[in-house]
Amino acid sequence: MRFHFNDRKTAQAAAYLLQLHGGSMEYMKLIKLLYLADRGVLLAVGQPITGDRLVSMKHGPVLSRVLDFITHGPERTQSEWFSYVAEPEGYSVALKREPELDELSKYEMRVLKHMHEQFGALDKWDLVALLHKMLPEWQDPGSSMSEIRPEAILRAESRSEEEIERVGNEAAEMWFLSSVSS
Image (cartoon, rainbow, N blue to C red; front, side):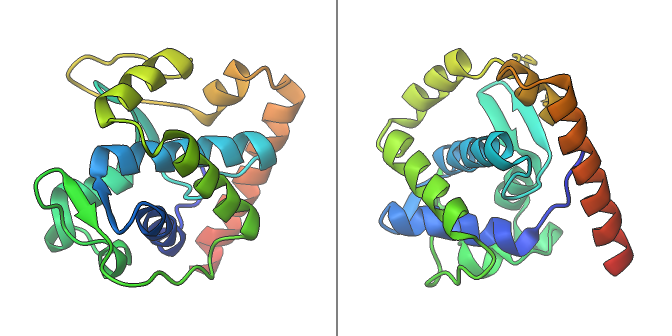
């Protein structure tokens, strides 16, 4: 099961979280909050916010492309991300400008705000430890990374095989439509 990655929407979601957090945040926390929001919306409506590839890493689950944006910067990766989010200074990223939010639904914004309210005040290492305990789909890959399949999240949260198949079919349709319209 794969989803269409929405670059603009991902950038706006990150910018919205940074705005809620006062304009800057440790990037590890930002990645975790985006992951939690993607996971929450996937479970609720069958489609994540970003469509990014989910992976397990030593310090928990991450969004693969978002991590690439942060670690590789605009020199290696073209993305709308860089119009909203500054390159890291130390271990933090900052909001570059007021975010447009036209890609995000009101529901997605509520989920992002809820994740920020619930987890945004935690120290990044406390958040890492908590997510290791609370997310059954995360498996410690040691020093490498391993993919987190959306089906694993759905199964971990007791979704039926019929529902998982429906989500997969809808994702495949959306993937096809996005590939022919690009």
